[in-house]
Length: 355
Image (cartoon, rainbow, N blue to C red; front, side, top):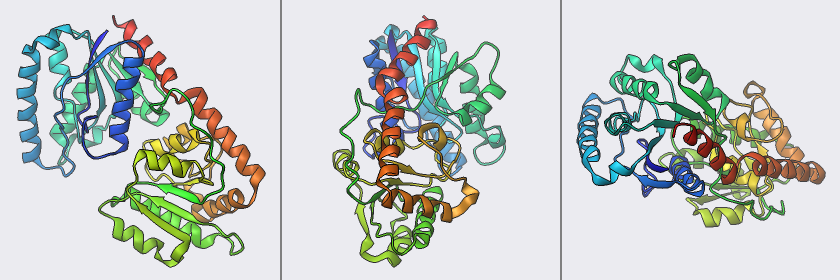
């Protein structure tokens, strides 16, 4: 198959690293691994994070021009399928449905979010466009059971929903952590949910018993760095702020980390969980939608608060046997479900069914 790929939220060529960019790149790699000829159809970003009607109108005009261009380009005549990653009310796919219709090829989506409550308010037009794009998809791949709930509720007749577990852009597991290093937190420093996770981390650390000589490295940067620094300051040199870390350097930190500490407030699923577990790093998180789909073992409910996280920190820091069993369970989960070959099979089977 010759597949046109598009990611309206953030193209895989975007210069700023993020989970969305990593997933987009992994999806293109998995499609290619499955034997398909994959082309990035467009790198236009259709994202409005502020709910600005003027911005949305300009993006819609940009999309119209791109649709006209793609519908006439000679390369488009070769495409057998169109696949869009991450259609939702802040970044609707305004390009894939009309181009697919013009070319008379199947249109598919990966990680589409239904949010009908957004059909009024500052994103009303974009939300309607995202719903229309979801309705147009012959097949939607979903990452988590939480995502599937609204997709099933609002699916039009004949639409196929396929579970595609989140996956790493790797064929095999890396070498396991020796668990000799500090705890590790990995997260962008953005206001809102990310800072909420950092706040929970700080609250949990204050509750860890004094005899537990924990240490923590934090990999991440962003607009809320000062807020995170203030939360962590009371712990002095027990916490090391690493700033933005490259993927190669992060792999080295995973190679010694004792555990990944990230509560996961409103995380869709979190690629760091998969990266850590692939390296045999146990995860300390809360039992939240999305997170529970990718994290091995059992974890405290959010209403158990920071005290429950503190108890898990103390156990994994002081009990080698428990830590090593959690590490093995983590690697087994990723190996069985969250590597590229598994994802490529699922993608290829569903795409082939539409040939």
